[in-house]
Length: 146
Image (cartoon, rainbow, N blue to C red; front, top):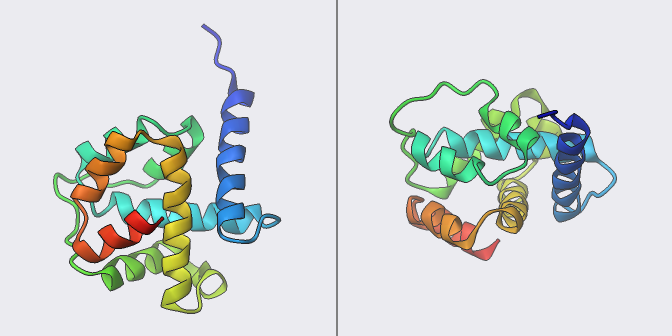
């Protein structure tokens, strides 16, 4: 069986294009990819590996690669009780580019919702419900509004 890497690239590009549109900047694919990576890394570090694997099983191959890049798997996610904890985690995951991508907490929240809207387009409703169930109340509402 031959691997069709072009197909993987096309699906990943389409996913990132969706994120770019959702963040309101359809021409800046590089920024969209940075934001996608930051949100995915913040999320994966705060849920269990089982929940992560169930989520990424439904994502395009190269988006899975972004998700797992640099992942130090532990049996428990870092505790996250409030939305601000997740906002700070996204900023931290964005690294030195966070000054360019996010000025305010509102912008981070909007980026989180944009990424989750795209994820909802690619992941089953049942898995979305499973994800929402493990989130703290403040983040559940953000995810539900996405």
